[in-house]
Amino acid sequence: MNRQDRAKQFAPFEALKGLREALTEKEYENEKMQRRELSEEESDEIQADILKLQKGDTVEITCFESGYYFTVKGKVVKKDVTFKYLVVGDGKISFDDIYKIKTEESFIYL
Image (cartoon, rainbow, N blue to C red; front, side):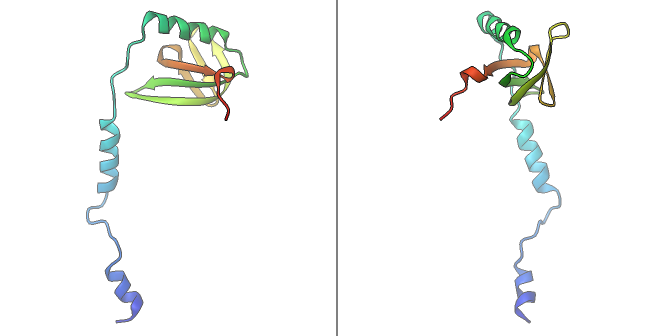
């Protein structure tokens, strides 16, 4: 048996097709968490920060959606106070889903 054929014997293989993807999906589901309720002061602070935002401001927003917290960084494209949402980059974020806002002034550059 030549060297290449022998090497194929020991090549890694996936015994159960789709097992790795199923495990990854299950881990993702297990990481879901309950939404943390904001205090009245935190909520007021977020509302004040939202009102200060202008189109073109660079922001970093931590939000909650479908059991996960995630952070969005980018420029404010649109702010709609009537329907209570922000558009940052390509994403639309409801005011109610916002957990924390950092503006460009509060970024720390090293």
